[in-house]
Length: 194
Image 1: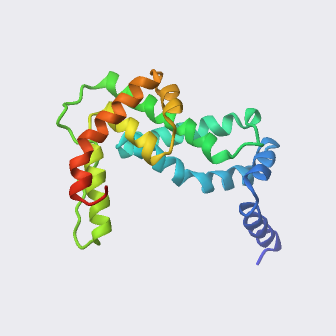
Image 2 (image 1 turned 135 degrees about the horizontal axis):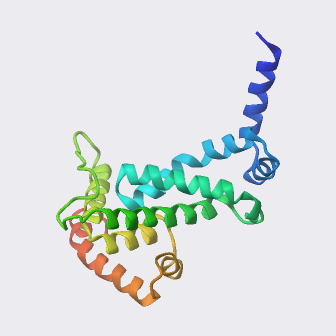
Image 3 (image 1 turned 60 degrees about the horizontal axis):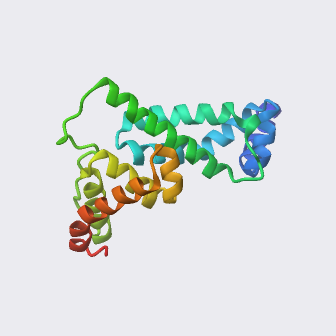
């Protein structure tokens, strides 16, 4: 076996174990391996965040890709004294919301169209069944309420940050969240979540 191939594999494995801050410094200097390691580390997280906001696989693909490109393109402005994950999450959320806005401009969706895929419980545990029931209930919310619920409860953003992301007053965000909780309460009670 070629020794250089072994060294590259070793270095790539060592690269993947480095902390984010080191990878970012190396990526700023042009290290392709550092960029690849950051991508591998954060792609699935970025996609899940995008999917939670958009409830659409294709939009999540586009939003996550766009966000990763923006984030990696802005590494020179990133403050490495702060955690990378939350910074990237904010970019992904903004990108996902932009994708929803673009879609809204292109097509008019009926209120009855489900945004989440139809889930089938099959042979699942009681906990999985409860999770699917809550997921379907959140999916059934109107888009404005669903986005606030996802951002607050699934992505742990405070109301003030959600207001900033959506360009809304905090009171409007709080009102949408309260109305969404009222709509979700019967499902949550029937699934013994609350």
